[in-house]
Image 1 (cartoon, protein in one colour):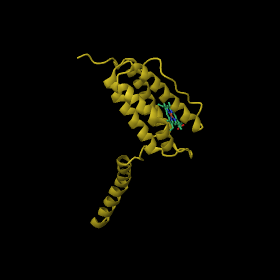
Image 2 (image 1 turned 90 degrees about the horizontal axis):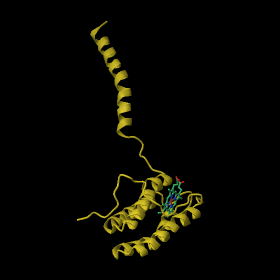
Image 3 (image 1 turned 45 degrees about the vertical axis):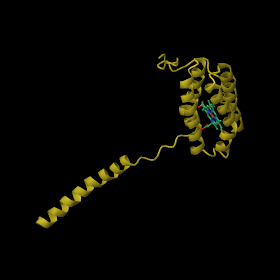
Image 4 (image 1 turned 135 degrees about the vertical axis):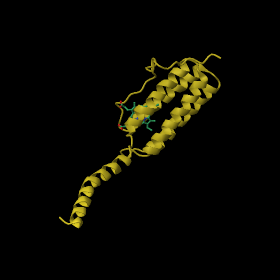
Length: 161
Ligand code: HEC
């Protein structure tokens, strides 16, 4: 075999081995973007923050409640941004029109460290969860004020200084 032929064979072998490797390296570098479903976002972000906020209020841990209220607000914003409409339901519009008022009432209650106002506002917020679920043909998803914290690794009592 001439030198020329053998180098062609070596080149071909290198290509056969390398091309699939390049292809899989590209796949590894750019997996399809993960777009969480609306129900995923609700379960991962809205639901735990709703629970933690309730526990914060019950513990009268106002600085943490303020923090968690902000987290919940951002969770709502991300839902609205990622799912402005869902099965032709205007989620973004409903999110603002339903949650704005009870979220503002919660902020006021937290600022004035008023546990009873907090409880009332939290009940109203929880009603809006269900109002939207019903309006979005998802009325079988029923949210209530939680009894206790499922987050046993987190201490919700105010930090004593
Ligand atoms: C603007 C509308 C809207 C608001 C407000 C809203 N949700 Fe939802 N939520 C939905 C829709 C629509 C679904 C169903 C999404 C799906 O099936 O992909 C859903 C699904 C859920 C789920 C998933 C159910 C399951 O068991 O898998 C949970 C949990 C949830 N919501 C909790 C809440 C809580 C808690 C609140 C209030 C703090 C809330 N949601 C407020 C629209 C809303």
